Length: 237
Ligand code: C5P
Image 1 (cartoon, rainbow, N blue to C red):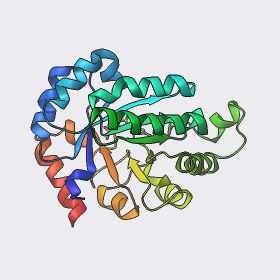
Image 2: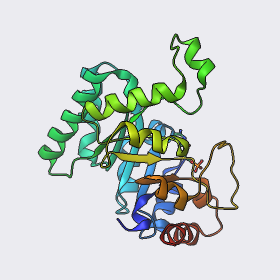
Image 3: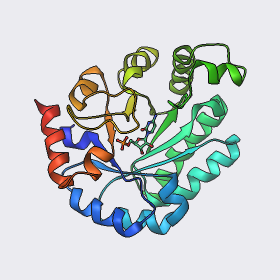
């Protein structure tokens, strides 16, 4: 994989015009664009199509979490859009994950697309051990992430989302070909913003990240394409 193909730029906006303009600027310098709940709730499938029409692969980060039948239905509903990566919550359990993976494969075949990666979210990085205890989980965040990663792998998911500090834990609990999608990336010397535990792009790739989710270091730069190119070059070196 080319270093630039590993970068998915997170466009955390509700404005379709802004998202399309940035996607156009970034075409050829990153592997794709991540659109999340904020964008999709505001603009729906039309917003997705407008950004996808720029030719950029899309990571649709909607973190589905519901009963197996409903999650399968949601995947069926977004499949015609042709996302490259989807997210679901692993806490939905093995049956929900299995149904999600099977449905993604069936729908991709039906629509003639490459199967999207169905990736699992384990414990949100906004939660700590005390938050887990509050909801009745006595294990530590690390133990729970490892348990859910193993379950995701066994249930047929293609990969998972993890923080930079969870890369080796996630890799150890899964397999070399399990895709690790990693936010919380900051080029050396750039502002952390609200990210508390960050890693540089090259360190994250060396640690085993497959895809780097990078937002503000690219979107807030004076020249987003130049910022993305510099990040890709730093992975190369
Ligand atoms: O601007 P920044 O590089 O911090 O953006 C990172 C993106 O990854 C945002 O869309 C954020 O919601 C997402 N994300 C994250 N940490 C997680 C999961 C997702 O930063 N644990």
